[in-house]
Image (cartoon, rainbow, N blue to C red; front, side):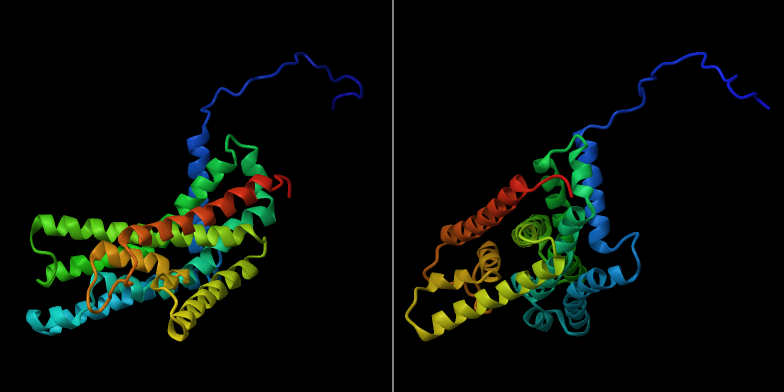
Length: 293
């Protein structure tokens, strides 16, 4: 046993870390992965997986139904019964709203409530890198509802003989699907992030997303039906803004006509303006946000 007071220090020094040093891109990847995992409830208890996974599954149900109808009916009749691609995006808009209201406040507010935001700011990240990684992660999750079901629908139609004819038409249809998916995903991602910036309570943010969507749609409908308001007033509705631009991407049809008196440029301008307003709220909120918990 060593006698008291007989211990000796033979050397003192500091050894520098000589392992790999990850930069901003690695830190952004970590935020991205964390965002996707939290949004889908991965590595969390089962109850956190129910809503996102159920919502994503329900988004595929119409495609499965249409493919079942196509498999049963003759191709000439099936082509008249099944839903068009533009109409499919309108069908899943409710699922899109629910996923946005559930996922975005959760992934944005959790870091601020737990103090992880401060830890991220101690890494090579700055606020804008952090927001960019969060934005891309949310887009990836929302695309599971906006883009992938329509790609699945197109693939099924093609196998059953009523899909796009030829390679060129297939590529054109695929590009339109991806563009339409991004129109919805970008819009609702920014919408949800803006609402989440205004409060740390994700339940309040979720309620705000749903209620503002319902309120703007009801207001636009009441105004257009009870007065001689110009047709563009319909673009006050949060849901109408991206869906109207999607109609322009696919072209107007009797089932899904475009708003009369509103040009394609004006429709795109309304979408871009709304996205800019949401983005401004996010940037202003995080610029003023304190790093410490």
